[in-house]
Amino acid sequence: MPSISSLRDRDPDAPSITMLTAYDSATAAVVDEAGIDIILVGDSMGDNVLGYDSTLPVTVDEVASRTGAVARSVDDAIVIADMPFLSFGVDEATSIENAGRMLKEEDADGVKLESGSHTVELTRRMVDLGIPVMAHLGLTPQRIRQLGLTKQATDAEAAAELRRLALEHEEAGAFSLVLEHIPAELAAVVTEDLSIPTIGIGAGPDTDGQVLVINDVFGFPDRLAPFAESFGDVKGEMHRAVAAYRDAVLDGEFPAAQHTDDTDLDIE
Image (cartoon, rainbow, N blue to C red; front, side, top):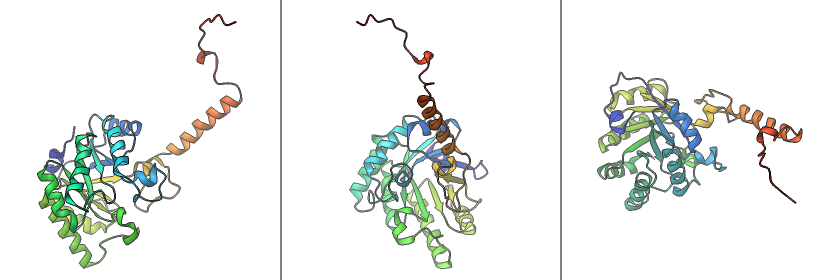
């Protein structure tokens, strides 16, 4: 069973870390049973399960509710709550209260912050208070209106800034770092720079682990990000099951005799 401390002190030659998102108890149980190391209750729930067009509208209450559902269904995986837009970084007290709620009330093991210069001291303070922090650099979806979906840190100045921020967050106490949609060679260098593990998404093969959105893995989107991959056709299987149910009802095949209570009632 992995733990925050085992990740922080991980042997660099250990097998790659596996991380997936999950937003509900049934999916979390499947992901946990499959042996995934970390489940991220991502703010990606916004455009994957809540019907929003981005992550920006996701609320603290929505993340909290789904973090609790996931944590109650998991035996082994580390559960990380993704702190949504403007739930942190505005003022320290509110940031800590929102993050602490995920551990105290919803049984998360830690939180993830989309990081920058503004989160270095906040990370330090949260860690000092006993809130494990996973940092996140590169493409940060909460800044989609500033950054778009383009690859980040593609010039020397931006790459140097990302390396500096990675080291500062490690020094502040972050236990791991997500690197999203940056050049693979930069991700490899950052991974070498740090003693804490890096987890990549669209960052090449040389990070210490990989993460994907579960809906992508299941084959739900018609179009995937260039760095994502589908590993099944769960959407197709769900469609087949729903259609089979519909046909059985319309044809009078369901419910059948075995689905009917045979209790003898004296009904006048």
